[in-house]
Image: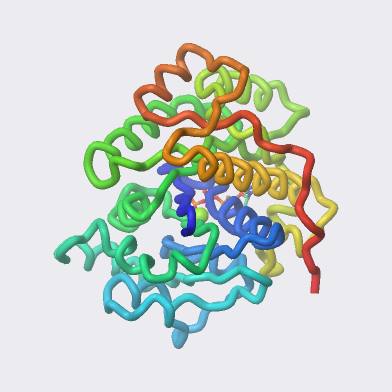
Length: 302
Ligand code: ATP
Ligand code: MG
């Protein structure tokens, strides 16, 4: 049964889409059957995967609003073991049309249920808002992966994010865990990045992924070539960091399976008090034992 991970942060431009595209591709390259769902009308995940605009192509809109079977909407992403449910700008209409529909927060959850058996991971890219599309993603997800850009004001959005997570758990999805907080666009040459990363680590403790995504020009270039970075420049720091993240996600999923319903072992490092409080409130603790070095098999680059 797939683990469904929503990539979400209300703040725009923090690396949600970059993470959805590259984590999905790296999971697939690591032998995991993966589905990426583009839940954002901006359709950046769809275009970053090399799908140019095509009004004839079915999108998430058909599955969410017109009840088309999801099997007919999910297509081969032209990468081994990776499928995609694309988006396009019609999805803006979906956010509005959902308002008056029955079961309006649970339509994505219902739609993907029949195909969860086919995959090990389902990754959902969310829009930068808390609209009904994001609600559908968070209702369908087992966990939320929160990218945070290492910049001034990053900390400010954190309590808002935790509030949102708590609200979702109280309302539409009591089981929603925190998969992890991902530091993105990290620049080790600047004191600011280092300071922000240190502050976030002391706040979130072991809920932060060990893998850190550096600011890397290859990650910014790859979407215009319509490919995830591992196919654009496998030797880039961007490719390496997303492969590491994929390994962490896989290791944590295995630990979860091994321990039944229990949370993964938080490891020996004790979390900072603030992080403990946040984790207690959020009801989730992530593992700090993810592998950083064991990259998966070389992906095919054809
Ligand atoms: P939105 O909220 O609009 O959906 P987002 O959170 O999905 O945005 P992205 O689209 O992933 O953010 O990233 C914003 C911009 O930053 C893009 O131009 C992307 O190519 C670039 N970018 C993302 N991550 C990195 C990185 N690690 N290094 C360099 N550029 C990056
Ligand atoms: Mg995006």
